[in-house]
Length: 90
Image: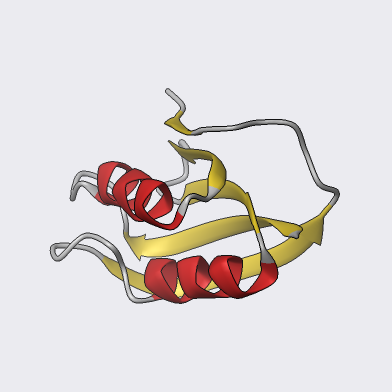
């Protein structure tokens, strides 16, 4: 099990990116959250077994939204956290 903090930049707002990231997380049973930042990036914290989290990260890199595009994705390991769901923060 591992947890990461991610920041995605590119065409990631106003394209359904948060919603489709949540759908991807729910399908893979990843816990955490996703939110838009005022600077136009999208921030994500996610936790899952190692192989599942790697698959989730790959999905985010490829943009879960067909209208989106990720130009840069930073990924940092963070401590494990409590939570059972993946939510969209506003």
